[in-house]
Image (cartoon, rainbow, N blue to C red):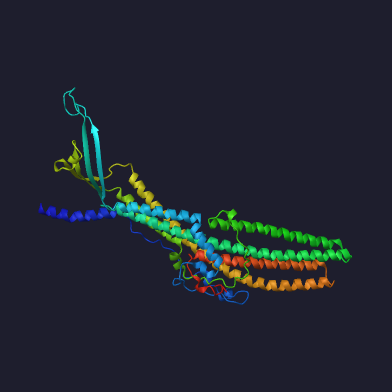
Length: 497
């Protein structure tokens, strides 16, 4: 008998450990990712790193030690700083994301409450009359109505035998952390959208300025051709062509104003304002030589900086914890209950007399026996949800790497294009100046002058558009890297030059 008792004592802890292992959430394992040692664009061959103007591509330094926070200060633009501050305060999407954070934190608080005993109080009074039969009296026996006064203190507590409560708390906490990371992702997106829309607006202003100069040139051509036509020096063909070019340039300028209005309205929405009540003053983007340095750092650090990757990471951990919740449902649940107080049929004061006391202590253990496969199906669903979250995480990482590479390549290529277009602008201006002199001297036709002026207008517009694209792509790279640099490098030139 003693041997059986000793065996039972030795087996009991082992069985308990096995049960705990069976129902606990599985240990979370970080999904394996093929993370490159460096970004491809930061390790291109030397021949590729040389831009068209002879400048070299600068390999970015690791960014982990860089100051993080208000990255837009690196652009050293007071107007941009004010717009981002305003959007951070008033953007509607950001307000929605902040409200979701509050909800997630509250849900986590509800889950945390299950860790401690729930205590309540009941106080009541009622008047009742019971039937004579219910009291065991002969039928027809008069029964007088009576009063019942009661006051009770209740307590209940679920013993977390198999980790249901702890797994549920872990899932709720990770859900809240995921929502908070999503909020940071929305915040970064709003700030980047404001910066990109702002630079697009300024680039459009610069393009309009270029078009307005072209219109002025066309107007002057019409005046000159009109005088020469009136004097009989030229035929009507040159005058008609000059008027056609003037009308075409004016139409292009009007069309660009539509694009500016649309961009201005988009900026108003980002700022949380009605489009009708917001007007952005003209501010042409004339110089992009002082765009900030954006150090790409190591690809592995991207997994820590990107808020959307952090959100996916927390979602995985929450899904993993819910497997423990589903498993615990298949095992016994132990609830402890207590009720103490008093009841009296006389007066309220009698409720608190010692003779009126009553109490109940209880423990209730319950577990499913036949559930038609419900709990097993819940476990399968939880495991599938984990697989889904792992896939989402992997996709988020791959997209993040691609976005960084896209924008690094974009800035490198735009730098080369800018160098070439700047040379083209110089040549086109010289060509237009020579064509004007030759036409004035009567040594070339108006078509030659027109061709040179068209070429100059086209090249100047391309140069303006490239300036805007470089500024927008710089912001896109910051967004792709997860944001987070201050204005320490504001005076340095673009990292790709």
